[in-house]
Image (cartoon, rainbow, N blue to C red; front, top):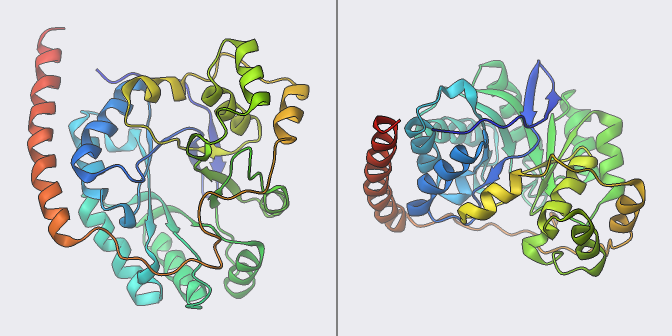
Length: 312
C-alpha cells in the first residue's frame, strides 16, 4: 500500500499548492518509468515531474492509474517541448501530452526552455495562459527562463508565471534570479538539485552530513527546502528514492546554510538557456519498443500489488 508522508507544500496562484519534494523522471527510460514512479508512490511521493522531451509521459500516467490512488492525490508537471513553440503548436502539444498521460488536466504546465533564438516564447506563453483558462492546466510556468525572458512575457501578457524551474544546486545558486523570483512572487523549482551527484563529495557538505548523521544528498535537499525551493531529485534506486524524501527530521543552522552558500561556483552542468539548440525527443521506433516493454512490466506490477493487498 502506498505510504503517506507529510511533505510541506508551497502556494501557487489560484489556490493551487505544490508539494515541495517530488520525483523527477528525466533520463529514466520509458520501460523503467512506471516501476520507478510506483516505487516513489509507495515511498510517499505525490509530485511527479515529467516532460514531452523525456518520452515517458505515458508511463507516468500508467503508474498513477496503477497506484490505486485517486488522481487528485497527485501533482503532475509536464512541459512544452522546444520544437512546439508558437501558439498553435503549444496548444496542440499540451493536448497531446494529456492524451499520453490519459488525464484531463495537468497540475503544472511549463515552457521547457525559452529558445530565444526562435523568439516565439511570448506567443507560446499566451497559449499556456489560454490553456489554463480552458482548465487544461491548474497552474502554468516556465523553465530555464532568465530575467530578461521573464520580464518580456510579463510585460507583454500581464501574466506572471507561477513557477520558474531552473538549474540550481550548491555549485550554481543563482541568487540574483532567485531574488527576482521572490520580488515577482514566482516559486523557484530546482532541477538537478544534487548537480548529478557532483556536490556530494564537497568537504563542507560532507562535514555537515556527518554532524547530522545524514547523507550528503539529504543535506543538500534540506538546504533547498530551507531556501523555499521546490525540488524533484531523480533516482531509480528504491533506497535512494526513500532517502531523498526522508529529510524532514532535521534542520540546518544559520551557520551551516552560510557554509553551503560559500561553495557556490556559478558552475552549470546543463546548457545555458541562451545557447540551447533544438534536439528531437526519443525516436518513435524506440518509443514503441519501450511502450510494449512497459505494458508487460505494468501487468506484473499490478499482479504484485494485488497479491500484497490480498495478503493484508
